[in-house]
Image (cartoon, rainbow, N blue to C red; front, side, top):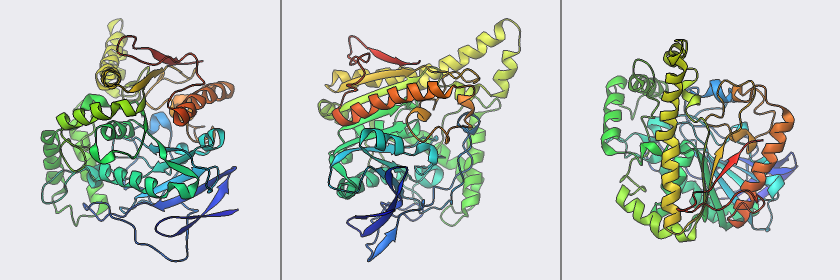
Length: 446
């Protein structure tokens, strides 16, 4: 069945999927290479929104051995589009969840099936908006005279403005928006909390496994990455082919990882003090000022770094050394998890709570019986988004019993939906509010 929604730009035509109305490939802005996002020209008549739009140019994710291989999508630089799942394109004014995918700023798409918002929309009577945005060099190159930097972040801000202006046509309440993200997407949410231009665009935030250890990104790091990229590209990036840009981008990442491939830090990320993202001092001041008006969930998984290191050849060789080898490899993994994810998450939660925000923290401990990863980066995602079929081949879920996935998934979604609706995971009596004194943390497991 086809359903219509009238936006400020024109009429869109979506369809019902599994009891939820879905609009795909909804363009929230348009952007030329290294140019800012711009409004979409209005149209007359109806525009089809039953098929996915293009996703950002990218190579396969380095986490495919953990998450599984997503379905193929058309890739294109003009990729600024949304996937909207709603119980109905009516005037019900439901709470809204805006989802920013992860992928180290170089991979991912809001339209991937594994990020589908059908279950959340259906179970919680909420509107779920998944955002695609520019990635890698095309989204985050900071090279004066070529690219200003933070274009992907500007895209995400444009998406939130589009939601504010249009989500009522899809049954959503623009005054009840929760922003959520995982990994690089969580870092986006962290940036938004202290970004003056995001004022009034959301009231709640969910931060899942943000790589907070990288900070907000420095000009020096961005300059070094840009220099290495331009050297490897060897031509003008404004006219180079997309394939050549992706090849040079991959070369930069391989070089930065080192001989043992142990440095997993992304090379093209947001940069403080560029575009909509203020410098660190101004970001901190904005966050402190806004904190009393926001509710926040912040969390990590039990073994974040296993997603990056469990299959690392150097560490696998280390584990084969009798006696001390496994302990040494585990120590490396724990140190990276703590520095990149755990400690920064606790610091952010404490800073928010001290500034007056209502904060809840969690650790996701679930581990599938046949998985070599334990509870890695991304392990909570199948319990929130997509369907069991969409995650059926994920190596991190090897050996998982379907009943366990269903039981834990319903609990987690109920908590997230309670937060989206009320600002607190009200249905979960085992989840006390975090304070700077108690530092209460909810552990998620069977």
